[in-house]
Length: 231
Length: 390
Image 1 (cartoon, rainbow over the protein chains, first blue to last red):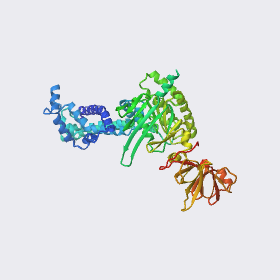
Image 2 (cartoon, rainbow over the protein chains, first blue to last red; image 1 turned 135 degrees about the vertical axis):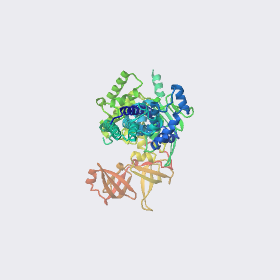
Image 3 (cartoon, chains in turn orange, yellow; image 1 turned 120 degrees about the horizontal axis):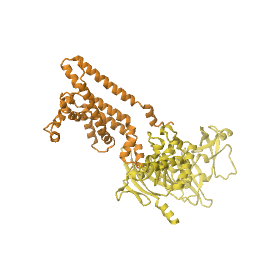
Image 4 (cartoon, rainbow over the protein chains, first blue to last red; image 1 turned 45 degrees about the vertical axis):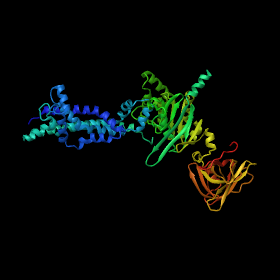
């Protein structure tokens, strides 16, 4: 029995990079979805939600095609770096971002739009720009939603399989993630190793979620933020 | 020197003409008003849904009018013709929203400093501290809005808006949720602030006491229009519109026709159709310029009517009407009696009066109403000027 520490580390790295990027991308995208009055907004919302229902292999297939040397994006990347995006860690990151996008953006947008519009109006009358209003009012009041979004994106990336297999293949230290490693062990009838790896992943994910939800359980403080009309 | 002060005052008037139409599935609402508000309190008075808040939103820039022009002195905030529309954040309009909209995650002092972000830190601290002191909330500077009382939150909201040194102040029912004593203290503080700064203040309320306590000028709104304006006394004590009458607290409002005009004694007699067909009640009211037979509406405050258990004699009051008590109901510290005298009249009495006269349902009584307690007003269809002074 041996634990594939390399793939375990790689998975955590991938999940960290992806959730960090999704946090940065999710703020403006969530803001736009929450506050835009563009008539075709629903189209963008549907697009963002697509990875929730799409089979990972379908998403993985198209990302693979888009990243490959036949596509403009793939050619541009190749001319820049000398190699293709497919079967690299960077390619894996791109695929995972698309795959986990809704898990970050939807909680973000939901908590942004639940902020009382009157607070936004008050902020504007006090001379604040929309950007300042966003960072001084909307974001602080959306902390629970932001934490939820980042955690879901992280957890979702930790456990992904189909997309990784399609665009990353199975290169040790580069694209072989924990879930692929487990699949390999099972294929090789190496159940003890598969079990060790699966258990490790299970304990790690559970620990992360427990810590985050415990930290996010600042409900006494949250309650302070909502004004009791009876008072 | 005097001229420069006058110029400054003249230049800080808020002048607004606003037209805004909302179309929704349930109703169509249109706001169409034009007015000039000089520095000091201008009360916007009207029932809910009359467009007061929409008007404030237009001045603040939160709602864009379909047409019109809004300016403070020479400074144009909005002009539909020149397509000028200064963004909310650049208007320098202080706005205390109806439910205050204090930032729940910020302390009292951070809330107060919020609108001062453009100033250096030291100036910001200094100005916020002075304002907190002026509104007597400096002892709770580190508390969050949810930890302080309603009256204190009200003060924070006012301080937050006023500290930015706005050129217009908009207050949307700022004291609606407060008890009388707290209200009176805040009104005092607001008055002081106003005396020192003199900017136009639009103050929305449908509370009569606030109108009388604060108002230098009252605009009465109904269905998106200004239907009356004047000093609080003019508007509230002799209301010509039925809406104003209801807001001003006329419990008894009756349709009537002019029956006899007594120009010599300065009164007219009005005929009120009774509840039973064929019968009527006559009331002597102040003289108005009206044709015999024309339709009028009469408002009488329940507190202005006297009740007697024997027929009173030797009174100056011109209206003494026989009736029978239908019901006697206690409301807090007053007693409301409904009396059938051909029409149903509401009369307010003290508890002591009820007990001394043994008033109860079924009792025969006399109603005594002074001529000048009968307020004639303009109904929706008829119009007439009031003769002489009130």
